[in-house]
Amino acid sequence: MDSKGKKIGILFVLCSLLAVMTAVVLVNYNKLMGKNPPPAAGSNTDSVSYQVVEADGRVHGADLSAFMKDSDFFDAEVPNGSNQSTYDEVDENGESVRSLTVLASSVERDIRVKIVDDKGDVVSGEKFAVAVEDTGVYVDDDKDGVILISDIKPGEYKVSLNEQPGFKVPASPVNVRVKSIVSYTVIDDIDLFVHEESEVDILKEDTKDKKIDSEDEDDSQHTALLDMEKDERENAVKLGIDVSKWNGEIDWEIVKAEGVDFAIIRCGYRGSSSGWLIEDPYFYKNLTGAKKAGVKVGLYFFTQAINPVEAVEEASMVVSLLGDTEIDYPVYIDIEGAGGNGRADNLNAAARTAIANAFCRTIRNAGLDAGVYSSRYWYYNNLLVDEMDSLKIWLAEYRDTPLYTGRYDMWQYTSSGSVAGIEGRVDLNVSYLGIE
Image (cartoon, rainbow, N blue to C red; front, side, top):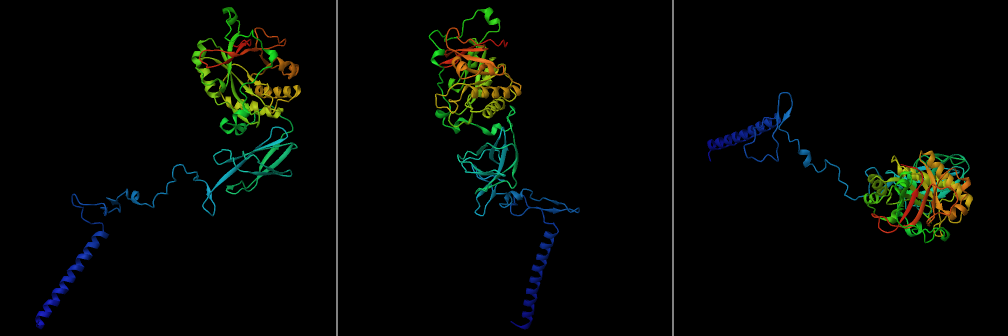
């Protein structure tokens, strides 16, 4: 190639390079200024979004849902069923650390401590220990999350929860004032001490076949609703039943149609062995079913209290379970034996009477009427009726006519009754309370 040809070749290459550089500059200038031409119809716009920058600086055509494609934008989801709370702390091993709260109260010369989590649930299965200032350290040996400390002198105390692995304990102690005497008022936090039947051994705690003394029944007892004359029914004599979980499912509409005027419903009981407060699992079902059918309602609680403080607990539980629901008949404390092995079976008459009075005073202070259920033999031998606080008396004596010579307002005349709508035996009663 001669020199003239070389010059032409070099000039061609330089022109080509200049054209490429000019095209690159123009393309990048348009991108920077937001002047890309709109995409052709049917073109793929997923990878590059179309944007136009207006004179006011606003961007039009931006992909506002682009954040949905960003895998790091959202927090990772916690799998369903995970026990870790979003508010739990974690330790150095990444394990969840639950925050605890200490609740403390007093009824009479005692401190009642309950350990709950951030959801308000009692924490069981751990051997917690609490320190009471100037008194000592007390351990939750049965690991139920509740520590009951008795024989404490009246005064102000500070209660601290000791360190426990896997938990964050309160940094400051909780204050509690120990009362010198029971005040017969509803305990505010009694709900925290109420258990469900699923938590206990029912065979040990709830005695099904409680028997009255053999001297208090004979073959003359009726087993059906009494066939009263119309004028007797109109003179405020009412026929009723008393029921608990042992009666199972009840068709209250049929029961009402059979002539049942009222029902005394068991709301709970104290465990014969553990002493725990336990709710009857059929209480609310029976309460709402009876009221809906037009059957008037009263309540009873089977006691195994061994002192007045425990009686106040039992009464407080009744009031708490009832809530704002109105009832027509009294609330009764059921005082009888629990087969000889109950924690309260060996109490003397004075102790039982004090328990009855404490229960009923608490019920009355809550604005409800109160009474005692027991058998003729027990009224004569295991209770001091003359020392009761003018309570309503519900007598259990299974015969045609009671032999009991004292005053009574309601009479349970059989435990072997039969009423349509209830499968099996049921207790039958007559009320002389005059409740219309």
